[in-house]
Image (cartoon, rainbow, N blue to C red; front, top):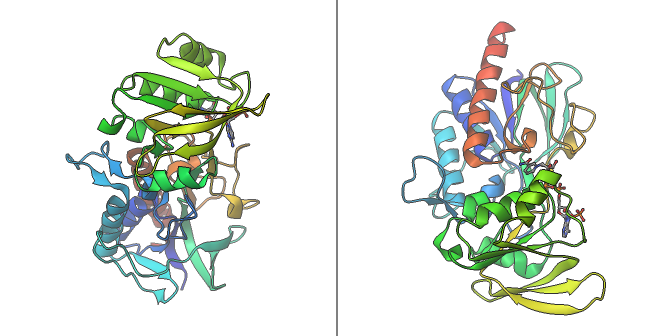
Length: 341
Ligand code: NAP
């Protein structure tokens, strides 16, 4: 018997879709996947696994760590009957959020949306059939790729890929901060950070910003922002917390150190959609195209998308969760219309 709904992804969008689908008696099956956001992570859960304190998700007045929040989401989904594909079979192994999990969650290897029921293939080549699928595989922030950058990002040592998520934290207040990148995100993050920082250095590898003209003006006119042109970060300095960065001038190759109290990497995101090539309509940057901005419908009837995989604009845990809710409700209604519930 085909599943009613398979959910691919285990960030806020995936787990919220699972909670809603499970409560609608759709008995969702989740491919939680292997962690992608950093090579050093062992648990899935998307971008939040790299976030220490989440302070902007409603309902947690004292804040909550990203991994703990994802464990709570998962527990809530399992409580209502969500099943998770693991190496040991369909065996949700939800343990104390403080201790993490022991099961090895399976990645989805490929999908076939060309005929119904759809098929979803796990890492172990097991084929699952489903009447509907919710894609919630997220997008990964691009990192420079430095060992110390990753170490300090994971430990909460002052390196982040999201100013809106982390910028208001006390550790960044009244400090000189760095933002890497020259696109709209970098300008937006730098501008946002000027609310808290004493100064923000935008570190850009060229002599021109990629950002739109209006955004460029916003950055260049801001007295708290200074652009360090033609510079790349070659190392992040500091043991427990960042103390600065080592920069290389792309013209002269000269290296210099700059003291910083925080570093925000804003060099774009990559949606996790490689496995969807040829199956769903994607935009030029690889994000899943939604048929209607207010819905979760995609180019294939019965396949829905939620969260950062189909949203390059907001990219917040709370917006992703909202999209997960919409996708589950869209799937539920579609299944009912088809007489497949
Ligand atoms: P983006 O436009 O792709 O810009 C990425 C920036 O990072 C570029 O300046 C690029 O440098 C730099 N970069 C890439 N790889 C790097 C590396 N390894 N080391 C150092 N620098 C690197 O990405 P984005 O800024 O995230 O924007 C994504 C999309 O969202 C865009 O279409 C953007 O317009 C949109 N967006 C819009 C708004 C808004 O309108 N408010 C806000 C945010 C994003 P180069 O310039 O040299 O390539």
